[in-house]
Length: 267
Ligand SMILES: C[S@@+](CC[C@H](N)C(=O)[O-])C[C@H]1O[C@@H](n2cnc3c(N)ncnc32)[C@H](O)[C@@H]1O
Image (tube, rainbow, N blue to C red; front, side):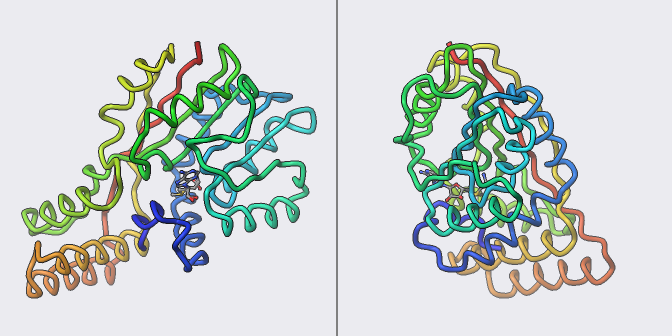
């Protein structure tokens, strides 16, 4: 479950694997709740104009299209041509071919100033070096008073019920340091939004509980990363993986991560 490589999505060849991983995440009830809240607080209404930045293959974009209805307009932008191709296929299959999907970069959105009532992004900012310039781009394409909704995780909150807590901490700390550009983004995000001029900043959180298989696969993989980097030994990796396998065999994996929703109003 190499979710960390989304930061180099244009170089990734295993699109099917990423699609499967994102779909597994999308099925997590606590994330679904946060997405519903993002739509409510993000100003998604029938007839509205909406942009999904870093839309991937359009999992949420399709739901937004449904909510704004035939009188609304909706666009999705992603840097990955593979994901945009998949998004277009899914939109056609769902009878939502009017979604304006475009390959593009969040740093340079292909829209005029003041185009949208609502802009949203989910798990995209964590992969970017310069978050503030992308927030400024989002503000630029929002109408004055338009609504922004951002869903992002804090990687340092990743945890699994392995008895050796020091080993767990070392592995998660290593992964947090290298997995993404902004592994604790929720920390500075409110200040960054405010500095750019956004108002009415509100924050909601959910702790996501990984499905058994996703949790086992993900946490085993980050053990491998830590061992490859020399952070843990081969013996410790074997202990880590055996412990996770034992829990999975009994359906007792309990792995979680904290997710955050930020909503705000453009000036
Ligand atoms: C973890 S995926 C999330 C996709 C989607 N938001 C979702 O929740 O299903 C991160 C997405 O951000 C996209 N992305 C990364 N950097 C980007 C950039 N600079 N501009 C636009 N999209 C980008 C990736 O291609 C990928 O589709």
